[in-house]
Image 1 (tube, one colour):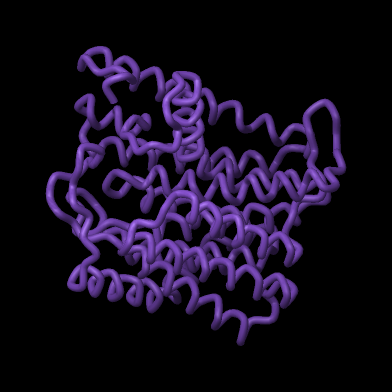
Image 2: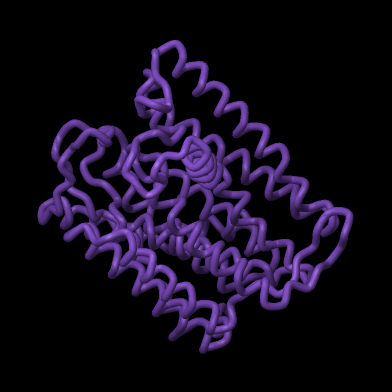
Length: 352
């Protein structure tokens, strides 16, 4: 029954899919151009800012929800805070696509948006840990929430560098999250995840290789921020709040690559804030793996993580974090494969 209802609602969201696609087409005609450089995977000038389509589709859906669907609201103060913060993230992202803002200003804006969400009441309060049980986090919960929101926002942004990779992953993760929320009675998360899925479904056909337009920061930062917010909201599915881990599990492929790359660059004493093209997905593509294959592998990760999330729901709270181990093993295997391809192609981290 939940699956049939999910499919029915996806059909009802076709107007939002169409709206997203129309905005994306408009952005192609009125382009913010992405000129290739030494760090780019593309070789021709390509418009960016296509993420504005999913943003507008999502915001329109949420505003309609606020007006018409009381059953799917969270408390007004939290709802309004989330919408304002999401709008701010999208606006700054669009401005960044147009004018290339400094990294410091982007981080400041992300921190401010995260603070709006936290001050509106969306913060972790406790977490169930294997072998320990439920731990009350206190003020540490606020710090973890801020770190998570900013980290997820930037991780999704960093990973948006190959045609179709992030957009396809977001569609799969959003639909999976919607299905989970529907089964657990989380109306707000269900609706928000469906709006995200609809928006990126409208964008994805234009972003498949070879892409006619890129998502840009307006889409990637917005998506990362909203998924981070939905993860914190999902913590309320259980008293132990371990259900916070559902969203990190669904997008674990994106998070692992971003974290692996950041840690590697720090250990090699590289300037972690400097531009580069040494993410695992980038090195795979540079070693000769076709763009469509790399994107497809990440879509496969998202499907695997969705299956793990279904298993996650069946376990007792103290065992649920252990579901991340199979996901980690798969990512380590992927990293090993990429390293093998790099050696065969004569690539190294130093010449990345």
